[in-house]
Length: 348
Image (cartoon, rainbow, N blue to C red; front, side, top):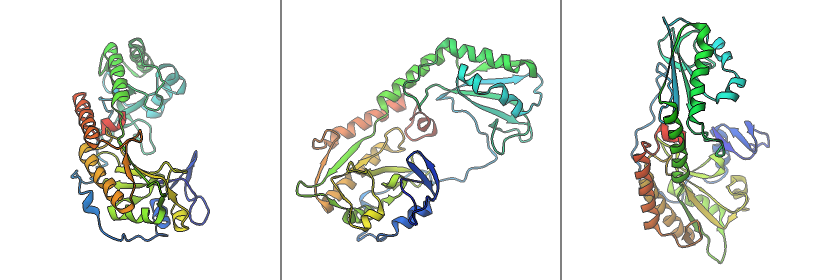
């Protein structure tokens, strides 16, 4: 899917609205982009090179779906004799009122039919389960101002889970970490997010004499092998299933902040800068991608002119920026979060 910020070519909304965005099939984005030349004036993909990562694998539907203990506090529940019970009935015990009091969580159940772990409630979920896992996020990544769960709150969750399940049988309840340790881990993960959620940014500022022409910019992006799509920006696609969908993206600070092919086609796009950016924690190869991004910015400078700057508008010190990325990667790995893996994507 593509998150485009405009309606389709026929003026009708082609997908589902989400605030100011419209979710549309990627085919719609391709049709819009095809209004402009789709073949680059030269093939400069070698400038970026290749990032070697495992290719996309076909997911085996017959597999366990389990919590991620690196970012979730997990409470395991087993009832004496492993009796079978209805997921819907269990789910009602932990409704919105319960979650409001004790915290939002994801419940997993062991499917009696398959013996595999899966989400307790889903469209094609299990008809009966015999064991449960309750997974609470250590960090609320959607609300940076959310208070840290205290040890007492973690302990209360165990007690209340046991209380709600006693009518099904005699429960044995075990948490993945003692409440005091869980509170400490929550604070540690919040600190990691605050310090290491870094996105290197390189600006290619247009020459003082003018702005970048939309058509020339579009061709330059195509030459590098970038694709126009999500958020109406350009992206270097990541063909693997490790890390973000894109290695880096290109946007602009010139309003509206993105590139509309319809406007480029009409010669109405002229921007002050091109902004190259990506997330270090979410990138599977942060240092290699930075090196490639630097080469890409330099190629654009040679094609379009302008100067390369950092966030402060100063000439970019590539050596210092690269050293900072190396250090961030080192700290992430020391904390047990390899850049680009699932647990890290959950935290960042």
